[in-house]
Amino acid sequence: MATFKQKQKKQQNQAIVIGIFLVCLFVGAFYGYKQIFKGKEDVYTERDLDTNCPSNGPDAYTAIVIDQSEGFPKNQVQQIRAMFGAWLAGRTEDILESSLDQDPSQFNKKAFDSNTIIQLYVMDKDALNTDDGLKPILSICRGPLPEDVSKAQSLFVNKKLLGEKLKELVEKLDEELGKLLVEYEQDTSPIIETITALSASDFAVDMDKPHYLIMVSDMVQYGGKDKYSQFPKYGNFTLDYDEWKENYQNTFGSLRDVEWQIIYLNRVGDPDFEGAQTREHQNFWNEFFRKSLYAGDGRFIVR
Image (cartoon, rainbow, N blue to C red; front, top):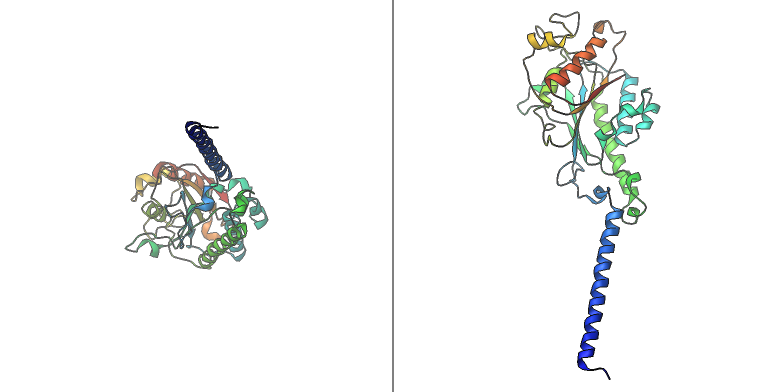
């Protein structure tokens, strides 16, 4: 017959075995959780109701700047809206089908990664002359794509709801683009002033995080009478960066390490733009971004 000490020893051993089992169970469950959500932590990220951004702030910043100084042909408007819809939804391969006739690899997919805040700005002189400075007219974050959710995660995450939320965000951006890409003309094209203002806007925060700039513009600068112009028919014309810097640079800013893309709207055939959009013109902006703003890599997507 077992003694009291023997029973006590047996109970202790059982307790140790149970303890080891529970520890192993916890470690296994934790490891399984980490494997399921490895690289997909944003699936369960708590989000701001207005912007859909993580409550603790976005992971990156993307500014889309629309140039309203000249009107947009109707077919160009449709193409641009289709392009951004595919881009935001992570379907850059569909951009070819949007009649832009571009290699989809040219489009920086990182600019619309999950948890990146997308800020939509308009380029016009009225926006530059406000007391508050340049402000985005739309700020939204894209959450995870439905296809980002693994089979294991789909047990806990409603992929249909993710799809509906993505559709809602794409439609929201498309609606705002539709308002901006209208037949609208101004007497100035303050491109340099807008970019400089952007360097002091809500876009130029958390600069230790990735930043991306996308401009939809013909990039032909015209600051107004007696100011710097990239229209040959007006005075003060030059496309030489060094000459511009010596004679006309009167605003300064920094977009250090910001990756940029120009959706370069081609005005070929328009007599007002004759001699303006040349290789030298693109070279000017390459130097401007690199030398004046200390920006990162950039490219032109000619449309």
